[in-house]
Image (cartoon, rainbow over all chains, first blue to last red; front, side, top):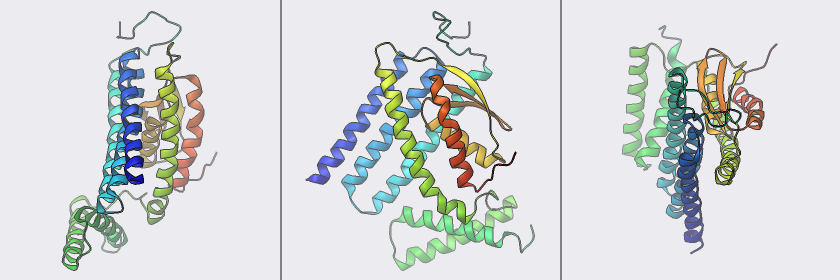
Length: 108
Length: 166
């Protein structure tokens, strides 16, 4: 019972961060700032879901596998974010600045 | 590849592979353990034979022992980061002032630098967009997000047992 509630709570937190990450993806002004919600909130979202599943599965071998999955999620998310940012930088996309105001940062 | 050099490296690789095997097979039955040990030993020997080296020389038992503590601290940073970034995203006015800053790291070698830049990407409002030698270009969502960089660098230095000189 308590286990179910804790597991459910972690899954709710994970879903919330996925929601926030997606919102950020839509709201942010340029490629670089879009990387932030997608690499961060989605990482914690996925990790919270995994923790929720770990609590739900209890003290078993699944726990180890879930930890390994979490490690791979963290690694691949960081690497992907870096790869996208790097190609954007090399593709001469300008970084959106607050001062420029209207500039939309699409490399114009 | 001298016979003496690689034995301890081979053994370390073998132990890591064996631990991974146990995690994946999820049993402690004798048959699986023996099979896993044989397979990991075989893969370790083959890796050294093919690549000439077993692991990055910076991966030592000490680094592996420190890794869980490092990961815990990193996860704590990630949680703080997420709370912060989520607050910014949900803020009606979207209070961001992004800029790309350059940061020179004193960490030597590819592996520590890679770990450092990955950790930066995972923590508050900072994404490493370029890494060349010791120069990192980091996209910060808000100017105050740069403040965490030095602490993160110290964490990675501790993980690899790097002393700062100069």
